[in-house]
Figure: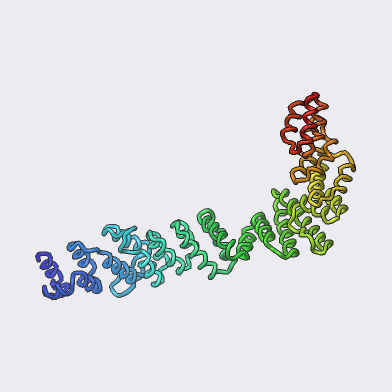
Length: 433
């Protein structure tokens, strides 16, 4: 009751002139009373009553700040009748100091500097609005107003500082929609390290949603290597061979423009060359074999399998395929074809640079033990017994082990041999060792 009487006496004072009764005060509520006082610009009295009644002063402070902005003009000029002239800096400082003194400063849940900054901006005081926004801690309220004020760079920086990915995307998409593409990219580039996270997010978005924009972004930023990598990535997914070839050649051009990427440029150039050759090969076989997309080694193998041996030999020279590698490729290709006569003729064409043991072991691994046995005699004598065993040639293995006096080898042959007659022959050999 005592508090109520003090409040009623304060508002009944002749300078205030609100003759309110106790019953009216009770029905109206203290909050509504404060609203009336605020609307009459009696901010000081309203603040004192709010403090006395332990009520939040936030609505009063907000109204006072907006009124203060409306009553002044930039450059110290007078605003409305009875107003005082103050600069933007003085007004901002006065508002901020008052808020902090009343416990409604940065971080307060009730007063938003963004709301007051919006009032300042609507009054044509962009500088004052910017100063006030610098003290707004809630980026979600700060950034949209900065965008509305066309403070694009500052809006992007504040969004990045907030650490809110969705807010950064909101700013980027807004700017992309509103600004010319060149100005949009320049804004990001001029932001430097401060907006680097936004640049990365833009690249992630564009890679999934708008590759044309990503290509333009790399080009505007003079990022030749990234442009080349993007083209190679696109080439790998293109089904049209001509389009894939063009993308590969364009990527090679980007790499060649960077002095430090000479190796990559050569590799991509060879890739384009290989792609063109594979396209020609597919035409030669009327599309019956899929050459496009294969490695050099697989292309040579497929040439052999398609009967294009001369083309395979030519590729061997053009792509500097070593003798050892070429022999391995031809061995694998002829084995897959089961071209045993051709494989035998190839093995005798000259001394094998890989030896003949690989012939035996590869044929055995593919399940062609009988054909593998024909090459054991050309292998190292010390390994012939073991190789014959791997081919399933137990008699030949037994003879090799007997010649070397290898009783352990004969015992192993006897253990593995599935035929009883052959086992008895091997046991006879073992007894004579």
